[in-house]
Image (cartoon, rainbow, N blue to C red):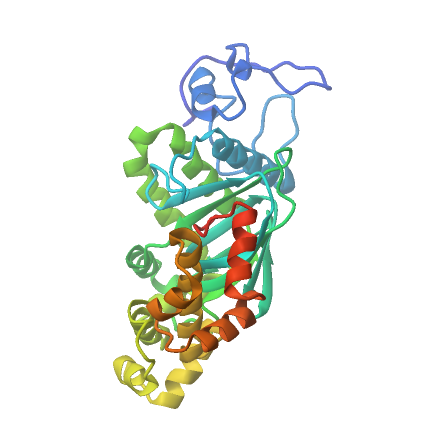
Length: 367
């Protein structure tokens, strides 16, 4: 062996009906203690980018590798105490979550990022259109995406676990520039969010990032490197066009993000589409076309969703009544607010909030 880790030579002998055991005792540790096991036996538990090959065993198949990586990620999430209710961790840009009971449909504003259901499934409604992502797929969104989210089937016996990688768009631009001719040319126009297959390469990078939860002293340096690796895999993968179009200066999408940013900040104010078009350096009809393509909704519909999601958050988290919430987010008519709220969330504001409180569900996001 050349170029590998130096340490005690380990020959693995094991019966067919039992997994390999390490003579240095590394197997006696808990399954999620990957870094300690690696130090105990640097050969058997050395991290690899490709299939794992152990003496006396056949090479790991792609499916086996994916399943192993997923188990490692799930173990790392379950082992973490998660003191932050939003799932934020010591690893910059990484949020994790665990649910032990189902979550009924509720409002959630996705920030730009990559979301993974490690175990379980998550259903979304985006402007009335259904989407789902499960352990074999991930959600990538490059803008603030308002959605209705449901997590069915979670239980103490089979908890839902998930993670989110927040996107640093400036870092994504740097990574894109470093690819050179690999990703030359303007990305094809596409929605600013996508559900795509989760590759073994992405899972491998995610597993190494989750492993940093047990090594916070390494997270500041290695976390940034892993974030760039994940960005590269996203940019070059099947969901790449959704992200590339946002950061390419010769694409219309970056100009549309000016309108998105303005609406996020000024959602309480009346929406003047002509003002938004001027802000983006576009004509009104051109802005409508590109905005719809990126978000699947019009600027006015997007603002309405922002208002309703924020009103729902105010009622659930801050105990604000429906009329006060309506006026705080910019509605002038409580009747119009109730009508549009029912259309989006399926029930009147008071009944909807009561149902959510009965289930003990907060309006904070679950990754």
